[in-house]
Length: 356
Ligand code: NAD
Ligand code: IPM
Ligand code: MN
Image 1 (tube, protein in one colour):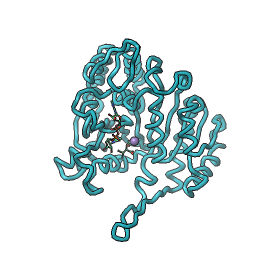
Image 2 (spheres, rainbow, N blue to C red):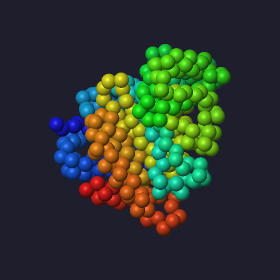
Image 3 (cartoon, helix red, strand yellow):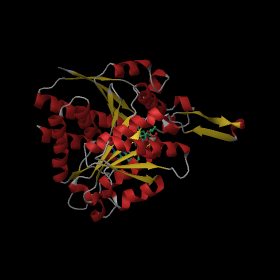
Image 4 (cartoon, rainbow, N blue to C red):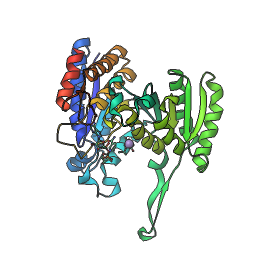
């Protein structure tokens, strides 16, 4: 049966890396006789330019009736001074909310041949393999009020969660830990924030339901430090929206580049959206040098989580590993050891060839 995949290229390198993921999926389609039907819709800055809104209704409708969604990235300097409701990022937050994508899974696993690409010492990152489970539809990003007060001389943002919103992401994290190495680190700021106190209480309550999982609580500031000094202590990290945003970019340093980090944004029941953790990278957009691997690995996550195509997903991951082992790298990945520098299309073609 054919699978309907909606592509949301977005802005900057988003469009460059979406093309790469599509090429790779076409190679999978040929090799494994799968039928993927692609359609493309505007989101972010390009949607503002074409439809005067960062999230056109037709984009939302198309996503809702798709089997899965792939998103590149949104944003760029052209729209940075727009009013808040006409910013590209609003489109991304809007589609996450519209599809109720509360669970953002960001796996951070270093490839062996990229150990030297990280500025961190090899002996520190060796063996690190963790999963950040980031809450994606609550917290500071969505709480209201969020506005200027007092003629612009004061401001308020709101960090709001319901118990139910916390419970479902914490459950997802426990379940993820059961599928991995049975250890969960809950990251919060319970020494200051009321929201974190409730979060910690819920984690403690839920422990009884997952007796095989060991749990610890780490304050977010210390967690930031531990991630880069002793990352192998982590298996699954669960945290609220903004902490997860910040910690996942930090964790990408373990893999050598932000351009390596894929993610899956999942609903309780409904269509999943797959997006690299990185943004539209205006500093390199249009140059054809973006690393497509985060996007390609996000497509592999789509095959695994939305379509149950485990063998096909593994084929993509193996192809990426093979190409990296041959010492090919994009410009964002440091390689002093006779590396072969390639651009986005060359990297994509190498991965396609490795699949075939
Ligand atoms: P960014 O992730 O776009 O870039 C940060 C740095 O990492 C840049 O130097 C960039 O060149 C590099 N980088 C990122 N992805 C790369 C890749 N695949 N290959 C090679 N290098 C890569 O973050 P930023 O510069 O802070 O933000 C730029 C814009 O992107 C902003 O408008 C921001 O709001 C938006 N953004 C969007 C998303 C998303 O759509 N999911 C995520 C993050 C940022
Ligand atoms: C991400 C991005 C987004 C976020 C922005 C662009 C709204 O940084 O997906 O990590 O903060 O969630
Ligand atoms: Mn981010």
